[in-house]
Amino acid sequence: MSFIILIFSKLSKEYTNTLTFGINKVNIPQKYVILNDTSAKLEITLKAYGFNWLKYYFSKPKITIDFKKDVQKQNGFFEWNKSNIFLHSNAEFGSQVSLINVSPDKLIFKYDTNLVKKVPVILNANISFKPGYNIFKNYTIEPDSINVIGPNDLVSQIKQIKTEEVVLKDVNSNILKSIKLKLPKDNKDLIFSKSEVTLKGTVERFTEGTLKVPINIINVPDGMRVKYFPKVINVIYYTSLKNYKDITAKDFKVVCDYQKSSNTQSFLLPELIKITDKVKTAKINPQHIEFIIEE
Image 1: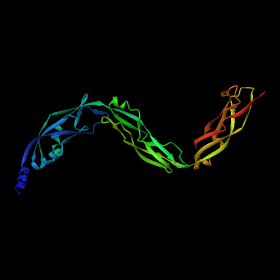
Image 2 (image 1 turned 30 degrees about the vertical axis):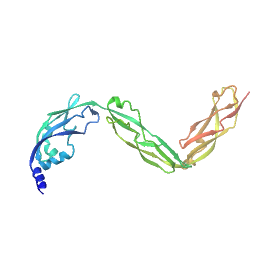
Image 3 (image 1 turned 180 degrees about the vertical axis):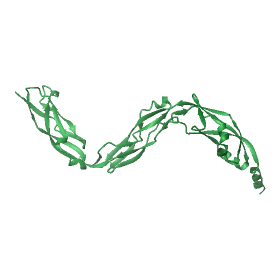
Image 4 (image 1 turned 120 degrees about the vertical axis):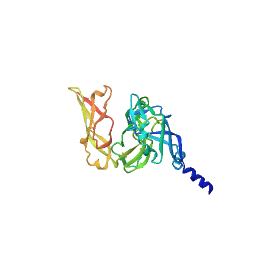
């Protein structure tokens, strides 16, 4: 009981003491980076009753400096004046704590101009589908690029940001997945606008189709007649079920360029030069077209 009374007696008395406060910097403009400020601190003398001192001994005290309103921008540095803390002492320490002194009178924060660079996000994915399923259009990443902010010598080295590897097996439904970005390990001086992106993909039922498409011979010399066989060729395409019925032979064009043949060969090479955007892939069969020159 005597010990408890002693403690309360001590805590009820008023004390004056000087503490070291660290600096908590907020609202630093993104285009600036603060240089070599780890040693910035304030020696603050306060007068308060013992109860009010307890919070300063259980955690390291800090003063918040708002770079939007508490500092003045000079040529190459920001300047903070102790008058700011006297103006807002009640808000910072409470009405029951008296602010006696602050040292030093000023704090100087040297800065450099940050580089803001937009870099693309590269998908690192291993995705396979169930038989009969696929994605028609390319995957989309939102956002497809991010801003990297920091010192010029560091930011200029970054050309792209990859995602963490995504492995999806036997996919048969739409893809909607958050993916973390693989950010540089030593990035304490860099700011990234995003740490993850969203992967999207519309998955559909797919099927294979075959159409017979006429072959056109081009670049035949004047006065020469070329007979070729076959006259049509199979175009084998892979498309979604919803597009299957809309695809016709007119959606493709196959040519054989006579100028690309040699005098010793008896065949032409067909080329698929027009493919509708309604198909994902397409190929032709056969790969050779026989021809003869008529006198």
